[in-house]
Image 1 (cartoon, rainbow, N blue to C red):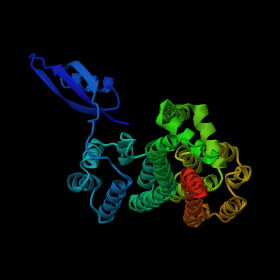
Image 2: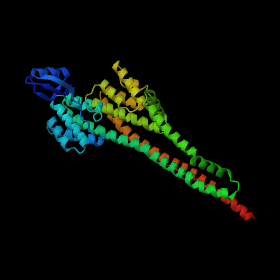
Image 3: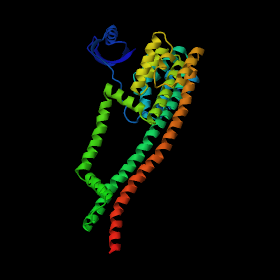
Image 4: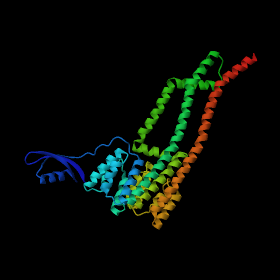
Length: 401
């Protein structure tokens, strides 16, 4: 793959010159300069310009991919299309990267190789699909499929985030409300009860004790413990063993684990189906699926499938041994392989599991809402009763007198 080098050299007359040259190696640049009767002084690989500013989102990539596909279908040459998009695309960070890709393509390298230089924007899946499209002369169709794939992936991510964020927000608000009551409201009542001098009922003593704990050093220690635990889990997940262990736990969680498995099936089948439909070889496609799975357990399973397929087995055989993939999915993949329409069957499975994820998210929300309301109502109800018990008791004493 050609690389751009910056060079500085001297002519026979001693004049210092500098410039840029695209070559496969530094030595190739030196040889080319000597042919031009220039003595190389310095030759360095040109570093890609750091593109700052706007964050490049999946939506930006969808817009670029669709527009690029439309231009290519209309017969506009790749370089010209990239030049137009670099200037007119709304996201300036992406525009700058497209400009760099255009410059690289002008030097003679393929579009896929040019995109490969920007892995944070164009991942392995994107690059491999573009390479397959270029090789097969069907780049426009591949780009359209890519746009559909990214859009579907965006929707899937949004559903999962929604499923996780909603309960997290509700629980956080509930905990905050209870903490405010315990730290700021209860001490006022505790002071009032202390002035009464009467013996407090057990529920009241429990509430006051918790309030004193949270309002003092205990509350600070509890907060520090929670932050420390979160930080520790994040650091643990950065290790290979920790990442795998936590991913395994997440897949076994009640309700949420079932949702994550459905998301994994939808992502795997759509990714593999899109890659195969675009002409990417099965082993390369499985490699990309494994690395883009987002879960170490799924990644391990897919790498295992790749090894088995490389030894001559079908995709369905090793998948049947994995707990993550339901028997129905394995059977449908088996039918797809038998009929020679595996790519189409995979996309159908992905569409089905997208709907399953929708249902799982709806069920999760429906189930969590009453549970959270019961928890909040019970907790606040207990606090209110605990606060009013001494007042009722005092009223009984006064009434008895």
